[in-house]
Length: 249
Image (tube, rainbow, N blue to C red; front, side):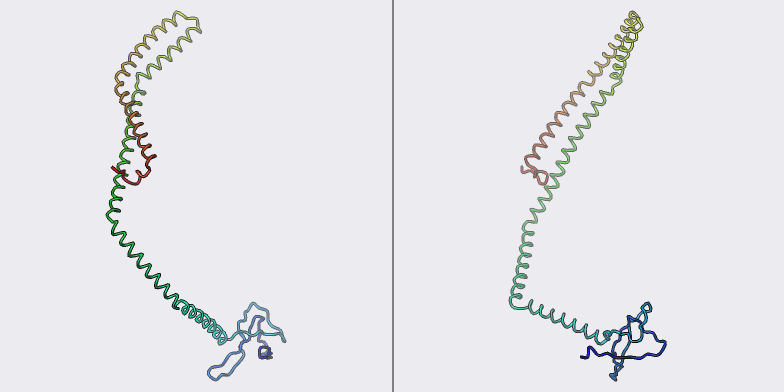
């Protein structure tokens, strides 16, 4: 059994062979002379002692032969796969698949050509409907802003603030007069305060009269805005497709 041949070698004194070294049979040039080459040893490994074994390794020819065998095996597998793919049944299936793909492509092109105008019209209608709905929403919020601004103008009128300050002064002076027993003086102050309050109320009435028309406009706008929002919400609830396409006339 050539795989169990043991070769004894002798080396000169002072030459160290490491424990991870491998002995490989090499061929010298074109003469075919074979020799043993000790390779793949590292400086970090421990040295071998006399009588230790050096394991055999693969020579360059062996490695090339092994790789060639692997490559040959893979080529054989690839050829078998190619043969299997190119048999009559697979060629028939491939031809059928290519024909179906070509027919599908033609049908798709025809569908696009026939519906090009419809697609363009749908896109145009969608853009127009989106702009129309956006305009309605902007108008609703504009009315709300106007109503809030007008109401804020009425509530921040100086006459209203002056009236509340006078009422606060009435209660303060009346309590102070009762606490000190100055009823007569308190009544006089109360009379003057009531007169001032009457003037404030008169001014407040004038303010309300002057802003009555604006308040009516505010209420009308709020009512109109509420109806528009209710109508808009009801239409979207009944027909959500209005958000993506124009409603049919």
